[in-house]
Image 1: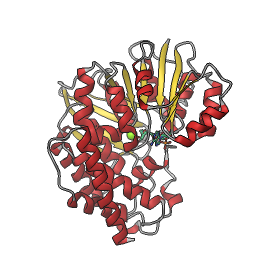
Image 2 (image 1 turned 30 degrees about the vertical axis):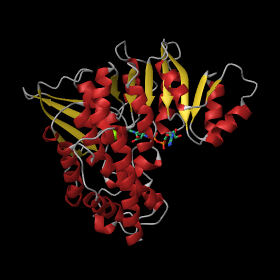
Image 3 (image 1 turned 90 degrees about the horizontal axis):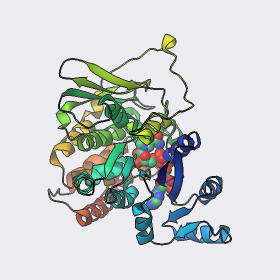
Length: 387
Ligand code: NAD
Ligand code: MG
């Protein structure tokens, strides 16, 4: 039995993880969860899984839990961060799923990196901002980081569930292109929130759905891949593949290209990662209908190349550059979702903020938080100036 803690359980990745656990109850056990504000969903999960441990940072959610479960003596309602840290380090914990959205996921991912357990990583933002800190920390504590972002999990599977890239000549990361693939940035000033949130292939949380529509998600994934597979950005090509069937392709030095395929369903990479290094789990998946399958590939639209070039620069620069990019984007996305800026301005907020903040090469956790804070202030100024 593998015991699992899910950080950020009430989101879309959380749903997929719980679905895989439910289908494999004889092998997987949910031991603890964290969440932010969705108390109704957390309540259902606690009841359904007869949960023993729950943590929330939100005072409101904590009060709700205390009140709702006052007679449930089996449930540990953790109060502070040190108790969460203690839980993550317990002997019976095997796997920690990092599934909080955005920079908010950094703190608990850092905690998880120090446990010596296995992290299933969905929260790409923590690697983008703190890859230089998290990866050495994980190594020091023998913590294994397994990607569940579909592209990175695909790369990992194409590498035979290994991170040895000695014989690799190229890695192609596929991108669906999102709902605005055929539109130029200049045509995106009138698109609505509803249109931007309507991803053609994947059902995901709001932030990543907007990132997919802007292609920022692919930029974050390029940086994530550079860290997770410890390769220069030159090894990675980004290619639009609108069907989202091939999740990535690894080409070896002898000319063989290996890809991983499935219908777009996050439970597939999650099931793979949860099964490591045992037999594969069983999953009720929808089979690819190969007889009607048409797979197409195209270049990333030319007017998004400035964005991709920034991501490539970040791969080479390291330091605080990922934090600046990520914070500028988080403010831009939030401002779009709050209808303060139009969709096309997301790019402007990122570019102008990225130019305005000085980069530092040497970073630690404190400087990451400082840079994040400083960048958010700057990005809000940019938003104000254009809204
Ligand atoms: P989501 O918005 O659906 O869920 C986010 C979760 O994080 C919720 O449980 C929420 O309670 C929690 N959370 C948010 N802020 C928090 C805070 N301050 N403290 C504690 N918890 C907090 O997001 P999602 O789509 O599930 O994405 C989660 C992560 O996985 C993101 O980093 C995303 O990029 C990555 N990812 C998602 C998908 C997908 O299909 N949804 C695919 C690949 C990668
Ligand atoms: Mg992805």
